[in-house]
Length: 202
Ligand code: PRP
Image (cartoon, rainbow, N blue to C red; front, side):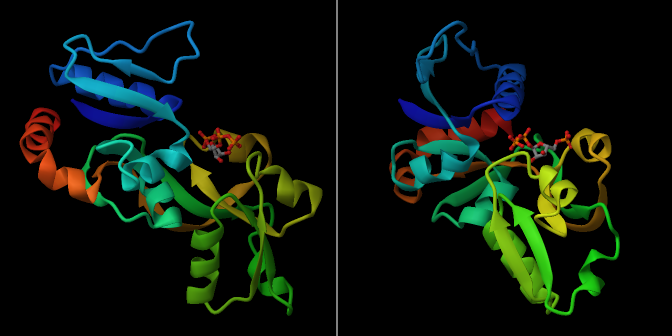
C-alpha cells in the first residue's frame, strides 16, 4: 500500500477533489482527530500533516509520496523527488508592505518579517540588499503595520489578507503550485504503483 502525506487545510481538499476527479475514491473523514485514513478501495493510506512537514515525512520514508507547495519545497530544500506539478494550490511568493519604497530608505538595510526565512534571505542577498530577517509563524501582515518590519515575504493567494490590512505587493519572487513528491528509495521500490498513480492523476 502506498502512503501519501497530505497538507492539512485548503490544499488537502483541492488534492482530494483532483484525485477523485481522476477516478480515485476518497472521502476525508469528518468529526475525527485521527491523523490517517484510507481511500474506499483500500489502495492508499493518507497522512494528515502540516504543510511545512509533508516533505520531511516523505524524505524520512514515513510516506512514499506527498503533496507539497513549491513555496515550502524551496524553503526547506528536502531531499525528495519532485514528480509532477499538480497545477493546484496556486499562489505567489511576494515582498509586500505598506511603503513601496521601503528598500531604499534605510542605509542599514531592510527588516523583513516572514515564515520563509531561507527564501527571504536568498532573495535579498540576490539583490545585494542587507536584510534583517524576523521569523514569525503566522499573521505576518501585522509586522509592517505594527512597525516591527519594513516589509514581509509571504505567499499571496486571493490577495484578500494584504488588501484588508492595507498592504500591497511590492515585488513578486516566484509563482508556486503544488507538486507531487516522492521518497527517493520508495520511488524505485514501489515504482509500478507510483507510476500507476502518476498515470491516473497526470
Ligand atoms: C497565508 C499567508 C497569508 C494568506 C494569504 O496565511 O501567510 O497570510 O494565507 O492568502 P490570501 O492572499 O488568500 O489572503 P494562512 O492563511 O496560512 O494563515 P497564517 O497567517 O496563520 O499562516
